[in-house]
Length: 157
Image (cartoon, one colour):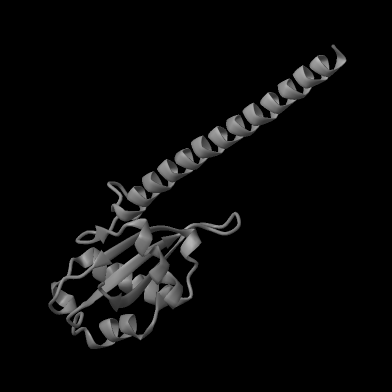
């Protein structure tokens, strides 16, 4: 009778261990599926341009979050980028909307024009070359300071 009791107890423990392992594996699979769904949803959000932006410049179009990494080439922090807009109209600077031209000049005077492309636009007034765009990036403040807008010229990809 003692052997039967010990066998039943060991059998019960074995079944509990197996059940616990199965439940743990099922929980891990469920968590992995939720994480995959969340990553797919975030990727879809990052790939689509935002419908509304904080920064509004006439004639520009908003770029999706996956394009925010391009600001790093101009010494800006991609993780602090809130909005990224592109103005890619061809033609001389005088034919651009007045607000775009004034914003570029104001950012240049403020020291927020990055790269030689913006200087060439302001000084030569010849416009953008083929395959280039004028970008406006809104960066969130790192401390309690205000948000800042930067301009740069880069290739359109």
